[in-house]
Amino acid sequence: MTGLLERFEMLIEEDGRAYARMSKVRAQGAEEDAIVEAVEEAAMVPLRMIRASIEGLELILESIQECRVYLVADLQVSIELLLAVAKGAEAIAEANVLLLESPASRAEFRNTLSQAVEDAKDLCARIKMSVESREGVVDPDP
Image (cartoon, rainbow, N blue to C red; front, side, top):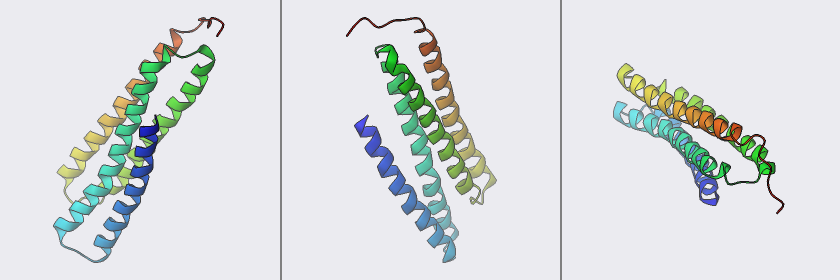
């Protein structure tokens, strides 16, 4: 999980830089290609956040059957937080995508975003089913 935490920290910093660059390029009235590139970069960082959230959810799915029953609630909190990160990142990316001139580019990127968030939601559902399968399981004494 440490690698994932570091990745999220890096993505937060990268998101700030990408947004600042996009704002600067747009304010300067740069060429259309430069604006599109900056907007796409600003939208891609949140997409990478969604994908990192999915990685975290996959780690939880792998570990949930092996963890002690009393730790399942902690994992459930982590599930909700990772899903919130994915949804929040989707909102950020969506705001940036609105700045793309091409309707086709907007639609394509929205589809990519929607699919990534749906993947996160599906994974959450699989994890919840896995948790439900553990109900009534009592850990042996440590």
